[in-house]
Length: 158
Image 1: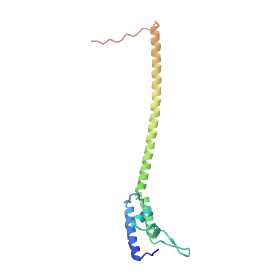
Image 2: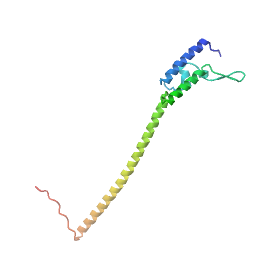
Image 3: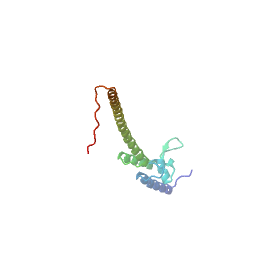
Image 4: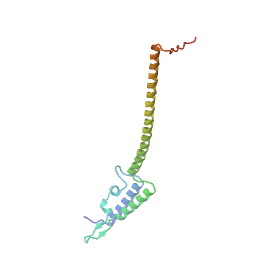
């Protein structure tokens, strides 16, 4: 693999900084997130440059853009800590969580209202049935000739 020239490295760093500012401002590409993968893709560099490399003797050396990855991670953490979410997916997840909580509360209120209405309906039907039974009993007594007298119907007055 060819080594980066200082010109290429400087050009790539400038592209990474521009992409970093865009992503942190919330201007994400479609399907992108506020992460190193999207940063690398937006800047047009490989993601491996953000991570340390192994020397032949087994020691680690920093990747050519590792300092930019650390800066990006730090700035992203600061934005999140300040409540400014740079990742639209994270904002969407937060918004959806709030909607779910609100809908759960509404469902609980509706369930409570439904239980109250069901109880009221049961009581109303029970009362209507009792009134119907009483009316039928009174009609039977009148029909059998008991001492009950029928109430005359009200006549319309001219």
